[in-house]
Length: 57
Image (tube, rainbow, N blue to C red; front, side, top):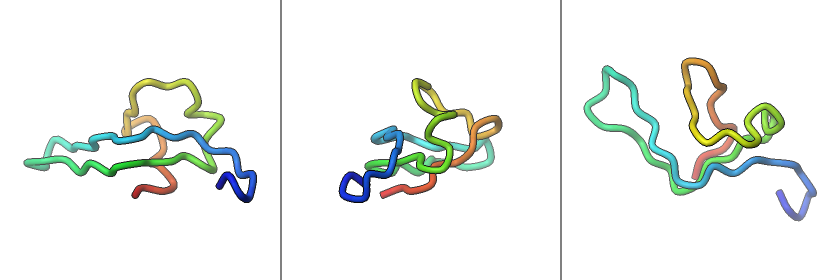
């Protein structure tokens, strides 16, 4: 993304959980590309309100 000069918002390591799951998933890095402007500056992600990340690694 740096090489192609694509704007993104990195949320780093984040745990995603749902009430019906016994455990969550935790990517090492997650990135917002399409919705980066909407997510910029947020400290917490609420997937019932916010879009999911575009890329998780």
